Length: 375
Image (tube, rainbow, N blue to C red; front, side, top):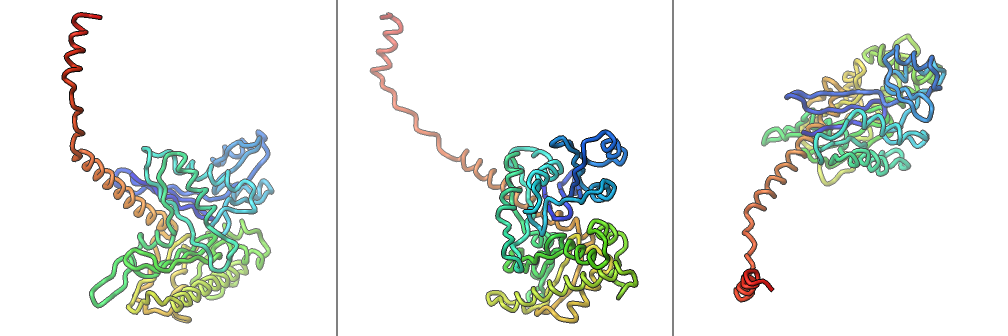
């Protein structure tokens, strides 16, 4: 058995296999803090909210935190920002550990494999480094008995979507360009036969869009996020609603930024050139907006990406695609471990028996006589 954890800025997802089917858990990566009063606790229970008591306060976790923030007149807090631990949130480490470990649960056995997504370091923000984030989130689970492996989320998407490059010899598997549009970052990887040779991130994603659009529309980011997920349709050229118009403008800006950066990186790379038609696959929560694929395709048509394109495909479920691809990698790693363990067991059984110690016959006879006659 193996598990996968996609620890995103906006959402946390867990996947595992159960009775031959892939099972998922999903929760919003957010929380609010409320006074520990019976009225609030009753309100939370009536709304079936996930909450814990900590430091003599009530911590509301997940989706309900966004909805209850305006009622409690507080701002929703985020353990992560721009794909990494939120350095401006004092309780980021504690809350991320509480939320993620509760979702993953205990390992089924010591050494169970858990693959965890982590963004690449961003090109546009040198101050952001993934080392501390990666080490800390792994420590949450290694102390519970898991074996952990960190995966770039764009690599996970590629293993889910299976892009190909069309060559004269046939289709080159798990090869092409994979883009994961997340809440805090956008991750990109260029793959050849399942191996990444270019990977990077841009410190812009759905949160960037929410913030910019909220400022234009003069509403909170929480309200803009909820509004966006319910109403946005990017197929509308320029909506009359100020909120929708702002979202459309900033979505287009993000896509153009990502495509231009990919084009530049491909042009700079001298070691591996993609000369044959390749797939581009896209996923991630920010890409699940209606009309995203069409808007993305129009940007590609307008500015190009520097390589011949075979097809542009979007994940059927953009948000679950990442954790599903992570589970594929986790399962492959678990099988590799089990195979290696079995090989070591066979080699151990093939080892010759150690030589038996030589018997000192004189000593043995003397001991026997002493046992019979006594001292």
